[in-house]
Amino acid sequence: MDAESKPDAWGALIEPTTLKIQRLLPGPVERIWAYLTDSELRRKWLAAGAMEMKVGAPFELIWRNDELNDPPSARPADFPEEHRMQSRITELDPPRKLSIAWNNSGDVTFELEPRGKGVLLTVTHRRLPDRSTMLKVSAGWHMHLDVLVARATGNEPAPYWEGWSRLHKEYDRRLPA
Image 1: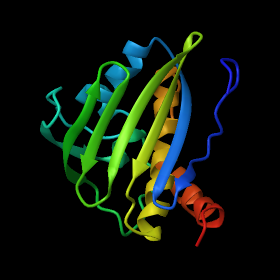
Image 2 (image 1 turned 120 degrees about the vertical axis):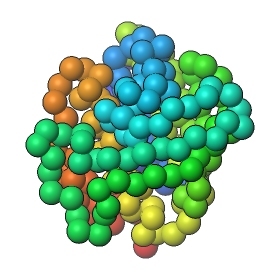
Image 3 (image 1 turned 90 degrees about the horizontal axis):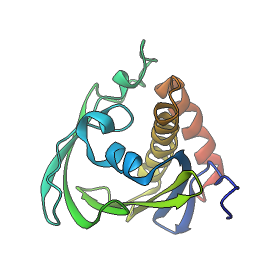
């Protein structure tokens, strides 16, 4: 991929239990790093939760996906209003790389790479435990990153749950059974 090309919006399995998904965002790298590490900024696209910026530091992520849009879109019946997850920083190289262990759903690495005036964000989610989780996570990352792109470019994001439901069906079609 050269500096002018955009990554494919779709996540892809790079190993049987590893999803990789990318987005090109407006720079500089330090601005996008803040969207990854600052609870208030991260809450606007993914999940709240204060992080101590050191390897081994535990923290809690708090998802409230209904709050990503105003008004919120209709949440699927089997999803709670709030989801909390105990996490731990496993690798830290500010402002280029952040790796997190997530309880019961693998490990996530965020990598930032300057691309001209933009920043390429690569999210790699490893050790997805089963296909059902993989489909939920794939649709989730896709939609959360679309929300991040909207926020970083000053636009209103598309309705989260409507997009997630559509993407879940598409990933079911795209990812191997």
